[in-house]
Image 1 (cartoon, one colour):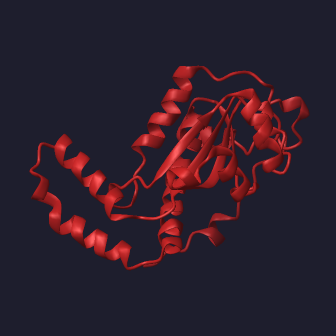
Image 2: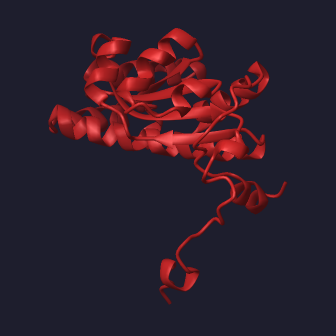
Length: 210
C-alpha cells in the first residue's frame, strides 16, 4: 500500500483476535523505534517489549481493564528517563565518539552545554522533555505497523504509578509514558472497525503562512 493508503487503513484497534505477530515484523517495528530521532540524539527513554500472557493479565487492570492489553500479540511500554543526569549524558557522548572514531574531547563544547542546560532544570521538567521524545518514536512505530498491516493501539489510559511499580521502573530511573498494543484486528467484534475515518477539514487544520 502507499503511504496514505496505509495510514487510512490503520485505526486505534479496539478488539484483537489473539493472533501472534511474527518476530521479524516485531523486530522491524523495534528497529524503526530505535532509529527514530530524539533531541540531541540522547534517546532518553527505553521500550519494554511484553508478550508474556501472565504479565499482560497484570497490566490489564492497571490499564482500566482495556481488553486490547490481553488480546493483542505484544505490548510495548515507552518509559522515559526520570531525569537528565551528567552520567547519562556523558554515557551517550562517550558511545557516540567511540562509534565515530572521534577523540573523547571532540564534542566537549556541545556536551557541556547540554549538561549545563539540563542540570539547571528540575527533574520533573527534564522528565517532561524526555517523555515528549517517546511520542516521536511512537509515531514511527505506528506508521511502520501500518505499512506491515499490523494493527496498533496507542494508549495513555493507565495508571502510570501502578505500571511503574509493576515493572520496577523506578529502580531503573524510568517512568512510563505510553503503551502501544500490537496485533491483528477482530473486525467482527470491533465497533470502530467499520467506521469511516474522520479528520478535521484540511482548510481548518493547516494554516499556511505566506
